[in-house]
Image 1 (tube, rainbow, N blue to C red):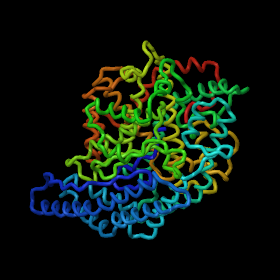
Image 2: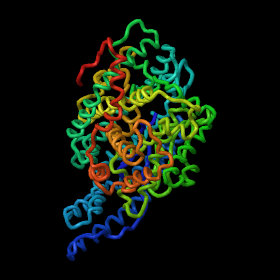
Image 3: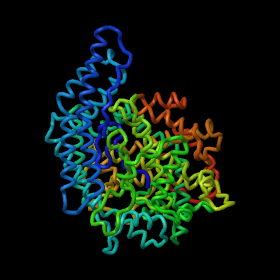
Image 4: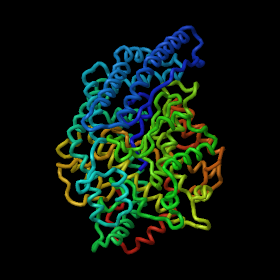
Length: 617
């Protein structure tokens, strides 16, 4: 599944999943005030930024490598690698959160009107990073880093078992996607939740530590801190998210009704349930139901069955190169961890796909467990979208402290966009990955896409974002973690557990992001709106194709358009980028238009059926 904890793309924010570092680039002062006082202030600011960047980079690169090792080599009972990662991150935290750096950045920003805009943005990035690691509370920061490292180790070192036999997360996903035996499905779903209870206490402690850390620099809570990276308040963000859900709710309600009846028939249920049993769905969290539909004439699993896992990654690279991007650098192939570990490896690795920028120069890597199937086909194209985003803004014109996406959602949006178009029939036909003469049913293809993208919005904008808001505002406590989680799952997704789940479980904590990519899941909801806006522009204005049936392969013009956005990094306000490139604000309109043809089909299918979700949410 390609929705994974990507690095915190705004510079500095450390995640045990991925790392960003930075490259020393001395950039000339841009044009600014002509009076001597203004020039002197710019020179003072640039001297600080150059010195800060130089010191930070060495520490950051070391921390990146330590985090990488902690994610690719997890040995039960051996904390050596974890301890090394803790030490490297503590050193980075001491520097980025130093009282001296905070005081200097604040002082310089008092004269913001005299500074170059890029200097102002960099100084703001310095303070944003400092809030995550303020050395006004050094022991608190140290404790949080250690707690995050331990939580990461427990999460990815967990030994999932069914009937006493160890299984991988790929095994669990394969069962939920393909097995019609309800007993086997229930066993896989329940096994996937066993990691939750061991994470409960650690999650509660992390919530407290994260809140206390950012409160030291004036934020009310960690959720507010993360949302502020968008230039928004939490209330504004939640209003935006709830608008997305309302816009897509009529279509989701049709999909939910269709799925209840479809799955009841598939599993031989005597009654159609009002809420979807969680183990009936092809995803551990009910966030993606696409595997329910097999499009006739479009069987990627079959087409990939004679391919190697290596071929899947190489073909994804060829796609980007066909649009005018450079080949991946040798370091990607030399240092990435792309494939499942051998069964006798003797250690585990982080089992969730992610993209890493180790030094904000040429060291780009990916952590995946690629197999030759449709799930990993889309995921691989998605991951390389992040890698090519890194490569695009790694250039002298973008200061190191601004080498990030226009916002975090842009990074996700670009990756998911390229994953989406990689399964459009014209794209696959051009690659010879469809049977000759095959004419896939366009409605079924659109239905499959909706069961991925539309279904994801109530989960991301609804369940996850509301639960995490409650976590960090104190509206939910460890005493009712599981009850609140399932309340939101029912409200926004219309899903229920196979049987009652009391507080001996911690099902929210089984979602990776809750633990180590915290308070940012709305990134993914925003990314879907952005990607459909970008896609509509490319399909209609560049390719001249139906947005639902495109082929980006070989389009240098499409590549140039995307690169024009990617290469900006974080140097421009993300709203300005949308307005300038698309003439639009962020909106769900393009996504609604994309799936509009599906509504009549679903209403016809659901005629005479009982709707159990309310008309509005």
